[in-house]
Length: 444
Image (cartoon, rainbow, N blue to C red; front, side):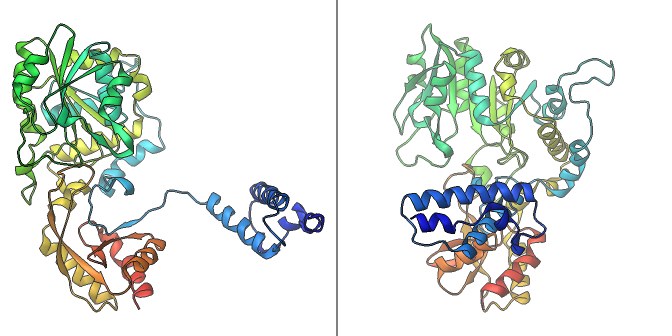
């Protein structure tokens, strides 16, 4: 063991190795010290028998490269899942990003009223366009939909009962559970109905002097089919008004224009929901709305005013970039420039367009395959179990091996029927050329 300690290279000597020429010395020394300390620990634990200095240099260089480069990297999404939670959900189009770019490196009127020269309200910025877009009384934006749920429950139902159907007590990604959020907010959960069937009478019988709200929750990521029944938002709104209660729909994700492939038949648009004049509705900005991460709350003006007075809101508020991106997305919707909303654009693509994209890739590569019809899903907890058509290219070879090889090149595909596939629905125009080069490297 003593001999091994003597073999540990000096920090300065190691730092002067030719492999590290041109690297930042301060950062390099920190990494070397860390690796030397780890080496000492291994010697003490007798987990190594000798010291390989060349391997030590490689480890230091790898760690330096990892630290010196951003950990968030652009990927090519060839999974076919448009709102892919693991890959960052919705994309921001270049046109909308360019309109927002000036906000990134400039002072702004975030909380400054240009008309009066006095302090302004940041929440008025996006609210103007979003209110006009949705045709609701007022809008409040927070940092995500989980924050929206918490804020609404804490403001209007703290120490009070909130009635929810058992069939809607969902858990979504990241172990986000409605019952736990309600508990944290101070609201008291009152379950009604059964897992597969909840009737309006169940809500009526559960209402008492402690009831503050009737809540409906979108069943993200799953559906209940067969012998089932649920109460629609129209009936809940009517009942809440009759009993002097609030109603709230945690919609999770909201779409605006009519969608293809029978999607609009599966679930109502946000406009159809708002026709019933609900007290409050909330959804995510980076799902079907196709913008940046945010929680968008639509509701009655007096209710939004009360939400703004809750001191917790400061912990949930969004920055100028989020507000600017949301505002520019809303403007694109108002102008019906759906091609500027990447999520919507991808969902609206027909299979003829996708087939042309696949054929273009085949021509530019050494693939011996033809475009093939398949199906995919929208993703992000939207339209659960609703298939939409797509076009894929199958890559011959070991599916698992190919999946890793493409992943190493930052191309994320999928395996279907023991075949590795590249799905055309989620490919961007800018992806085609680099993807073709990667295919030619891997699929020999």
